[in-house]
Amino acid sequence: MDIALLTAFLAPFLPFLMKFGEKASEKAGEKFGESAWTKAMGIWSKLHPKLEAKDDARIAAEQVATKPESEARKAVFQEELDTLLKENPDLAKEIARILQEDAPDGTPGNQVIQNVTGGQNQVFNISGSTITNLTGAGDIHYQEAAHQPPIPTKDVKDIKETGAIKTILVLAANPRGTTQLRLGEEVRSLRRGLERSQYRDRFMLMERWAATAIDMRRALLDCQPQIVHFSGHGVGIENSGDEPSSTRKFTVIPDPKTEPEGLMFEDETGEPKLVSGEAIANLFALFSNQVECVVLNACYSEVQARAIAQHISYVIGMKRAIGDKAAIEFAIGFYDALLAGRSVEFAYNLGCSAIQMAGIPERLTPVLVQR
Image (tube, rainbow, N blue to C red; front, side):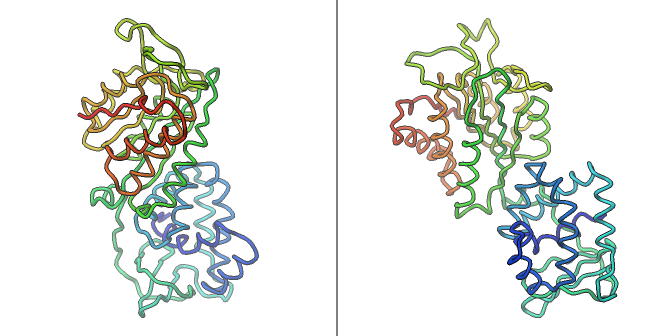
């Protein structure tokens, strides 16, 4: 199956499919024509359950739905569709069958032409040989058309190299038996900040929940992030100061030179798995030409931050235990600034200010380390 073709076909329908209901169906039928809308709904009914089960795929679809003309967003959605359908070959066959079906009026189902404003057309060859992306709006209908030479589409890597978007990778881990943290609230706040940002088209959010060490390594390869945000527990040395309630610490060690320190990921069974700061730093060294900033929103992560900063330009860690509320306030302030186009230094200072503005006496806990 041509995934680029499927992505291009679904993109204009996603604003309606993601808000499916009687009114959405009626509007989509009027806008695109009943034949095309029926085909899109048939594909969506098969695809949607699998897509909902994968956070990255669901988020990519949501972002296309908010701006279906964005080539950057469609490229990420295409990548997620490709992964999902490779994992579900029977689903891929079923969707391919729907794409190949004739329209209800009997015309062949091998090609769709969308008449768009400006007298241009958007052509989708369902057999997989032609895809031409042109912006615009209008009716979609089925008809035969002359063969067109294939036009290559940009992949995610090409788009990132042009500076069009930056990817924020969130790694969240709250292993079994550790203090329960409000990680969901932290990530939701980040997502809401992205949605309201005037520069939202420049950023893409990718999430890995219940993250293992393997998940981190694979996500660095697959997502190619410029910003990496770890949210969870840390293991490290206790510094002076009163300990806040509901901290993001796992345990305190007297001396990181003689005892292990690091970040607490999950293992394959959901149990705590400590990954040392040295191991994490060595991993980031391999991605130093890709990753620009790392945020370790976990207790006692200053030691790990300084190790990572040998290879990455900007790293933020916590010099002692940090309360859950303070960690969330810092994240909101930091990303509000970053997504508004401000520098990492400004975003760090705004994050610390957000802690203070919330009336929490922990504004000096976050530390920015620069290479």
